[in-house]
Length: 120
Image 1 (cartoon, rainbow, N blue to C red):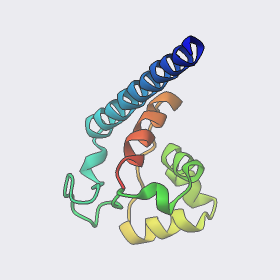
Image 2 (tube, rainbow, N blue to C red):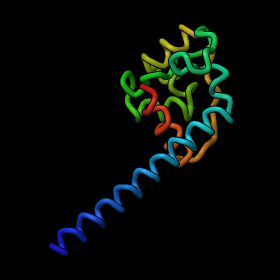
Image 3 (cartoon, rainbow, N blue to C red):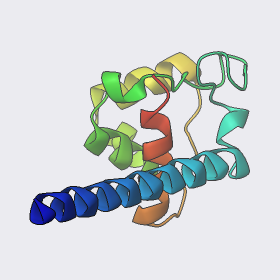
Image 4 (tube, rainbow, N blue to C red):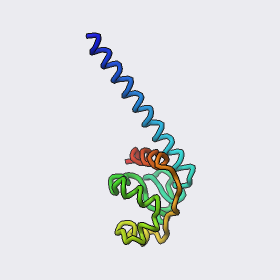
């Protein structure tokens, strides 16, 4: 019985720690999204309420595109367009502009992605 309770308690502590870490990533991702000016061109549903002609709405973006595609595109949008990527070219044609290439760490991208994944 004591072993079962100890195991349950340890599992609860680990799960709570993981949720806290995820919450920190989401909060940092939101901060980075706002601080870097992403909201100047992108809305998330009605949040930020930007001009829809500037850039795509990112609400539910992970339901439309794969994480790998999003990461590759956001790291170097022009290279994706130049490579002939169909979706990148559709976005370019629709918005008439290329998202600026940002130099950020993988950890920062992961935090932004965790934030965006919560925006369904």
